[in-house]
Length: 158
Image (cartoon, rainbow, N blue to C red):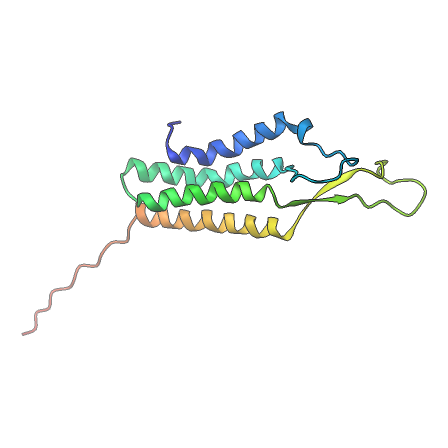
């Protein structure tokens, strides 16, 4: 794997995943202090992005090997992909777990247990990410395999 710009598509989800895994205890929410900082618990989203980024990464590589494509489009694609990935991690909201009205809890969780829930912004950003990756794949296929130009048919009329 070379140290090119498109390498960020595969490296960023892995780096963020291991950073969150390493600092998981430091990022945990203490219900006694309240929720005053954004909490990031989106390791599942990071793992989900690796296959989403794999095909566009390969398309970047193919275009670079064949020396095709516009450099500005490639830079914008990588920058927007990483921006949407990081923005997606801040869309979860902290909620209080719903407990039943009966005397015993179904899941045996304390009343102060906090849960993470995806908001509508999570799904909008994830949809935009998938749409952007699909459109880049179509762009790169169009650049790698351009349509053949029709040759004009010679006319024999005077």
